[in-house]
Length: 506
Image (tube, rainbow, N blue to C red):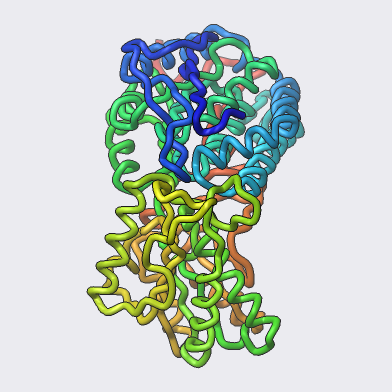
């Protein structure tokens, strides 16, 4: 892997089996957020590149073998891809770290999860029955419901988990027999480009996998509106997701949107009744808020803690947040990397300033750290921040900050805790901490969020659907429902002994 002074130049657009430069010849430098220095150069595509990629995917779907390849063979290819991901784990984990700013260990875990996703969807389709027989009430009729691929899928993925989010779309799309064009975030495209290389190495037919690197307002917008695209899957912010849905609407395309979150982490006093319980709840609150510098759609950015334990809980939380080791994600001992860009850091600083103006109390962080050997001054670092005495009227509580900022609210009763947790326009994820099993089930049942963790935070299972309520999006990823997003359902009714029906005279 080259160091920061060596630019890796990549022809990062792949269409119809060919790696090439952008039609316009434009390129983009990819910056390492730890020092703001370029370490790679990729093609900067536009609408023309998107059109070429869609045309290749359309030909591969209409004329190529992949949609008709037996499920067992598609599954075998997905398993080969998983094996290649394991083979390249170290290189890909390091690349994810330098591209997105996360620690190398987080990058390695991401690659493990990507391989798991490919294996899961391989197993899911390999063991399926060819169709569901429907009893038509007659021995002369054979009726069956079958699933077919949607067609050409456009996938627009975010910058925070570049390869993981791409895999949640690509693996089920391929398992179902589709072709696709993926547009990774223009600032973190490198591991998705590498994945397309692995798909080709695994033997995927020409034209099935296509990638266009470039901005959302050109490439992404064109993919969403393109008449030859049958499905659009988008993960990102609410504003961009709304534009994607509007662009896709005239073509009545299938649309899957995984958007923002403002996720509550509800801690009842009884969860902290023992020293072990207290330490676990604090530790998990830190993990919920500050993994990948809080740049996670499911981050537990709202701590909602019972009033009787609030002072002790927040004091320990702030103490430990202040000891989190910030630095370059590739450095030994670093626990939290930089934000992805200077623009993102500016946004975080503005949110913290507005919170303080509105009455929040700063318990830790709230500023850029002092530079060090592992923390270059030019890097986009920001200290993990705990804001106490927050309330629902504050922007920092209502809006998705997407950074290392944890707000603290308090409650006295179970009903109040549920009301606070549900008082958001989003509904992606949430958690409840309690030693009372009955309360855990009650509160989890009342939370209006797509995923609810009890006495845990952040784990996901490939076989469990992932999605949200409210403005957190529509559609599901992972699990059987994630596969269903990339399929159409067909009912085949065969009359084995046709006879005239004589509805009309003649």
